[in-house]
Amino acid sequence: MKAIALIVTLLLGGLLIAATADLPDWGDPNSPASVHVSQYYIENSLEQTSVPNFVTSVLADYRGYDTMFETTVIFCAGLTVFAILRRAHRRRQKAVNPRPEREDKDLILQSAARMIVPMMQLFALYVVAHGHHSPGGGFQGGVILGAGFILLAVAYDLKTVLARLREKTVLRLSAVGVLIYSGIGFVCLLLGSNFLNYSAWARIMPFGPIEARSHGMLGVEVGVAITVLCIMFSLYVDLASGGEMDEGL
Amino acid sequence: MALNIAIIILTMAGTLFFIGTTVGLIRFPDFYTRMHAAGKGDTLSTVLILFGLALYQFHHLSVSTLLVGFKIIFIAVLIFIASPTATHAIMDAGYEAKVEYWKNKLLNWPRRQGEED
Image 1 (cartoon, rainbow over the protein chains, first blue to last red):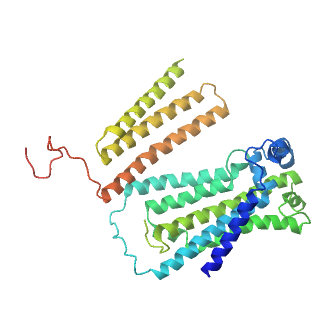
Image 2 (cartoon, chains in turn green, cyan):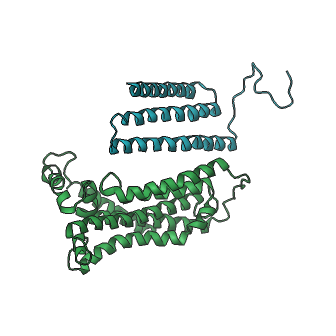
Image 3 (tube, rainbow over the protein chains, first blue to last red):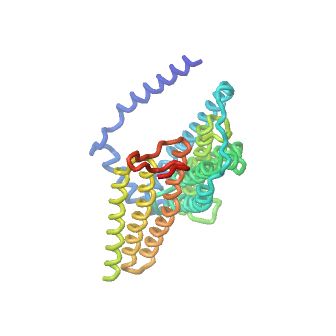
């Protein structure tokens, strides 16, 4: 089994390295990106998508496929860590000796976390929703949301946070995020348009095709944020406790 | 004019405290005293410089400059809470891990409990 995995990995890696030979040289002035592609996005993205920040419109609309599979890669990475650490945990359960629990709870850390975490979550929502107009978006907002939960886990302990946000919920929600993204794309397919062509939403929603692209991007960003939040938290929980879900750090 | 003077005084004071922090971080003898310098000096100097920058925004009063100024003040408040807490957490972790503290044998300081001169 391991030999097969090694062969598959080597083949895929070789394929990818071979494919990089076909990419244009770094900073090549004659590559399509520097000749006409960037120009097109800079000049046309505002009138085509009504999103002032064209980084967001390129990321979530013109190259929506790429971002969808990026989200899926994050999802798969989280699941892989979960699967590996949970299995390893079952094998070496006896080898781990528990740390002595500290009796005194750290009041300073906990009060500071209580003050900061709501601000972080509010800011994260702002980053997600404001990605159209300023730097930000689903990935960044999701990371800040996840960091809020990780801060709680550091200041209190893992059990307290897991009681509020159960592991099952986290894993389900991370799938829901990917589902929101691909679902928004799939509805476009049902409405007789291309996959991830958000302007098709104008047929069932009370706004024009250009606003539909802007709103579609917002929906997609929300999906990305949910997945990134859940995977960040799941990664932290698994890595900090070695898959044991006890106090960990 | 008065605003400019206030801004200059704030940023200069911030820079001065930053220099103090750096000197303390390099010259103090052990982990705990270095964290003491880093935690206190760093927080105060950052907050002073940020307040200077926020005041600089209020040269021309309009919605956008007010917004930027209040965002900077918000960052200052956040640093004022977060930085000392982080210092405390690192210090506590060092204490838990039994990091050695500095002793001056010449002055016999700090004295052990029950010890008299």
